[in-house]
Image (tube, rainbow, N blue to C red; front, side):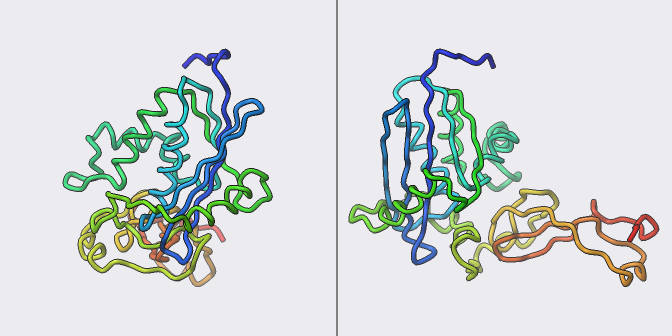
Length: 250
């Protein structure tokens, strides 16, 4: 896509917070255009961290009246990965089904976000959480005010199907609450790739590399890596990572 240098350039910052976890939630958005600064806030009675993150990005882009060059700063990689690695586009191409029978998580928000991104030139930049980034620190402070507002909204999509997890990410709490209904429903679901959904809590899994010792050499095989859910701490050993012990070098 050819870059249009005549478009207005807008910077967007935000953060979101839940207290007590897992709700209520609040977010605060800061938007800069030249010397003009605008702030927006909103709180929700019940929702999830992923829905909250997508919601603030959507809200910010909806505020733009004309096509713009938009630079979005966030301390979470959820939106960044699913946009820049085209995973959301793949779900869209599959009519928002992540399996033959199951709709993608939060597809209602992904659909809105992709349409908005098409209207602008959007760039995402990850900033480390609480790394004294001025605007993100400001948003973090004010997001706590947003969840104390009197006019907290209802997330209409927050129901038994959409409750993929009842907590936020690891920056809020170590107390993991797993919905038994979700775990039962996903019992036969396969977890084989990075960013698949965890069977127990439907959070995104990550790739981790185990530490091998001399005891590992006593086995006939080893796993080069495994998939790990950072929320409920579940580990998944996948066949693709299985290696002959003869190939292991310690």
